[in-house]
Image (cartoon, rainbow, N blue to C red; front, side, top):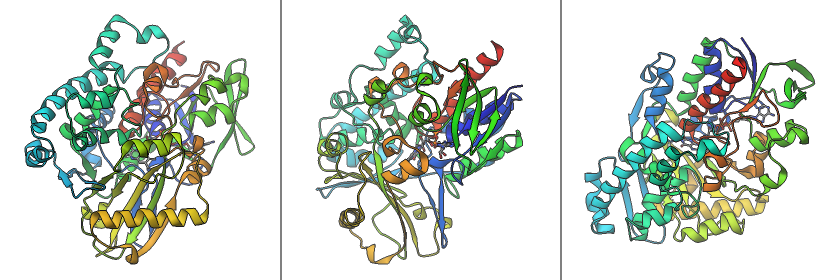
Length: 491
Ligand SMILES: Cc1cc2nc3c(=O)[nH]c(=O)nc-3n(C[C@H](O)[C@H](O)[C@H](O)COP(=O)(O)OP(=O)(O)OC[C@H]3O[C@@H](n4cnc5c(N)ncnc54)[C@H](O)[C@@H]3O)c2cc1C
């Protein structure tokens, strides 16, 4: 039995901790903040309850598989309701609004109106997406990449070719759909990975399969119910948690991590798994000679955007919204340019609006609305008070205009969260909301490894490493981190 310390309590932590404890290891988790599971934190105030980050329950198959590993049934823990329509879309600068249903035939009229012939093209697109999803989930995603030989095998090369890994998603989508609107609908799934479609490999079209074929569900009560269920499993398996316990240093002797320093206390461990931001772990918890990647490597990395986020409690039942609503910017390229190149508050922003009180009355007082508005925003950029107020007014007026309802005068609760909070509260590099973007050069073998190259018993789990971001993918990172632990213990 090994004594394992896990630094940080995100999804990667939960999934790794449960698996390690299930294999009878002694697992202790240290979390910097007062709540476990940061990227799924909760804000509660005067009868409102906001899930602060994840709000889409996707890839239900992966959750089912995860629970099944422990002979558990996810449905005994979560009451999952399908959302139908899955979401609503507004196209900024046009009169067009569409509700997207899981059943494609219900969308036929809308899609044909946008681009004649597009529904049949969508069937074709989805057939390929499903095929690619199966390949990805069987062979590529649940895999630790250690050397080029894990990647460039004959079998893998054949599969990568089928996955169209070398073309970008935008070029791939253009082969099926000619209208800007249909292209935007197909490419929006990249918002889950927060990467421009011209920079993401075409293989991420599998997210369209996830969206249309898999459907969008909502765990009744709130999305945090997912975390609660994982925490209860972890507790039953004997995992110990320490909140308000930031790890300040990992001490290494002869290439082996021996101690973690937690607020002047030194505790000895056999294995350490870091779920905290990869960049932070490398640069702040380890000495330079123990870092896997040099600064030059890190400087070249492209970070996913941060967010300008407003949590709103509204004394009004707002019209024109679904549980999930998207407002697409008029000119995506300009929007990405503002975020990634010019690093300024987007003037033609995209919006994601989550309004769970549309389907779940328990998240807001009666006749009130619980809403969160997220605008992808450049990392590093911190607005001063005046700029923030101006930007808030600007985005709220766009939202009111688009959805055709006024609610700003009826806001009774409000909280802002932005780049500075991601940085200070969660040690997120550049204040990015999600970590590394999903470009080709940051996928699979090119993504930071789940294993330190300089410290034998230090491993990584979570969205920064393989496979990629998102709750279901972080669940898979358990498997990858645990494989590392097993190999180390048995060596
Ligand atoms: C705005 C937003 C919306 C999202 N929406 C969705 C969605 O709808 N669906 C979906 O599936 N996914 C969504 N995601 C992505 C998903 O939430 C993340 O990919 C996932 O939760 C990341 O988990 P993680 O394991 O990488 O750990 P993280 O959640 O990043 O947790 C890392 C933990 O480490 C802690 N820590 C940092 N430094 C230290 C230290 N020194 N000592 C101890 N602890 C430390 C932090 O406080 C934090 O708790 C969203 C993310 C964001 C930000």
